[in-house]
Image: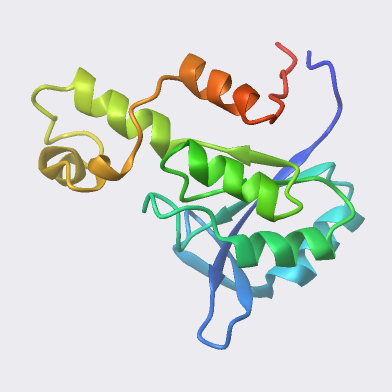
Length: 167
């Protein structure tokens, strides 16, 4: 049992040509036609405690988090926003926290792509994005820090790390 009853709702968003953001599902493959701000307000009304906001456009690119999307979401929300999508190194995390009003940043690629490149001398052609791993072009964008080093760097930059209750 978790120590908290907070429900975190995941929202996947993509910038449209007119500058607005729409919500998507299925890892960005299914268009909902719903504006992100409207969906944020709806999930709050339904009882969400936090929002995990993923920029589909930045996810996996290593180009940093989408500050415009984060700012739109934090201005529209009365609940905490966790930004996700695009972080390749510690500067992307610290920049997002310092330059927006985001409550937290979730990281994935900056941990798993460098780890996979190290662990897999011969990437499997049957699992995962083997072309991504085989070419290693995007991996070069990602820092090589392990989780303990990332935590240390965050603390050195004056950022806190939230501890999660164990099941």
